[in-house]
Amino acid sequence: MAAACGGLARLLAMAALCVLWAALVDARSPVARVHRHLKRLNKPAVKSIESPDGDIIDCVHISHQPAFDHPLLKNHTLQLRPAYHPEGLYDDAKSSLASDNGGEKPMLQLWHQNGRLKSTVIAIDTLVLLKCCCGIQHAIAYVEGDKYYGAKATVNVWEPKIQQPNEFSLSQLWILGGGSFGADLNSIEAGWQSGAYQVTGCYNILCSGFIQINSEIAMGASIFPISNLAGSQYDISILIWKDPKEGNWWMQFGKEYVLGYWPSFLFSYRADSASMIEWGGEVVNSEPDAAHTLTQMGSGQKFPEEGFGKACYFKNIQVVDITNQLKAPKGVGTFTEQSNGYDVQNGNNGDWGTYFYYGGPGKNSNCP
Image (cartoon, rainbow, N blue to C red; front, top):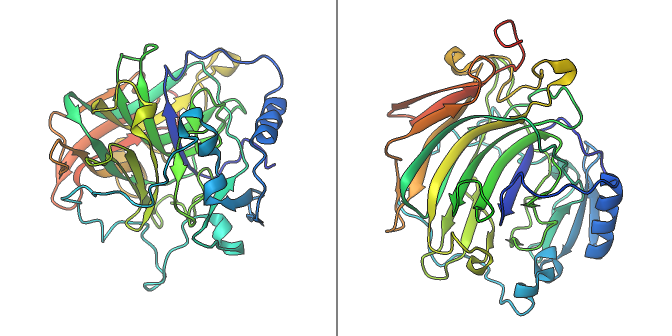
């Protein structure tokens, strides 16, 4: 199994049926828990592919994926495509994983260098991400006060530096329903992450519930290529929406890759709709040596006012309304706990729609 604290940005998806940070942490070795979990899954791989970064991608038949270990999915009929896509998709032709390869199909994940899969099998990354549940800080944009049936964003991808092994930095969207971070909170989250994450909800597909139908993308595997300061910029598009016919919550990566879905009956408060959407960054600040962490958010090197090529961005952020239309969000607010460490600035224009820059270096002269 690959090390849990790799620096590369990784594709991340989660469904949490309770408050994300309130679960009790097992005091025993996290590595031992990981091995017990993988042994319990016991999914025989038809093929294994080693990624250049050390990840092992296990390929299992689509009908043998961990989702079907869930007791409510024992007799579930696999849905191979959504009945409906949201209408009104923003034109991302100029922005989706931009590269200089002359029209060649971009490589989406690092493991693609060493192999591809048949459509009847799916890819499972055996890396398990670990999380510390203390000192969470954010820089986000959000909407609330309406019924939301999905959300979309194009997210700039970087490799922020992580100071401590138990810290992480992620960029994602949240689809929230139920209580305000209480025991009845339902949350779907998807994006990219650098650093550690201990599973207290269900990340990727190692926890049963999310049903993957796509063989091209491995949840949790490294995204490639990534952006660099004042150089080439790369981004990914993520769309999550509720199928108005079947009621399942679907996830799409880019324009082509419908990854799978969360069956609607797994959720109590978001079976109908969500009540809040958030987009942005999150880090753990464990305050090493009683000082703010050096763990970065977004590009990590610059604050939002530095703009394109230096700061990290979300653009073309949209919500899905009750008519299954993607619309620009109304009344977008912003929030950060400590703007001198991580900040957020939003805007709107014809090319990027509703957008914002966010992030920062963490500890600095104004944030000791």
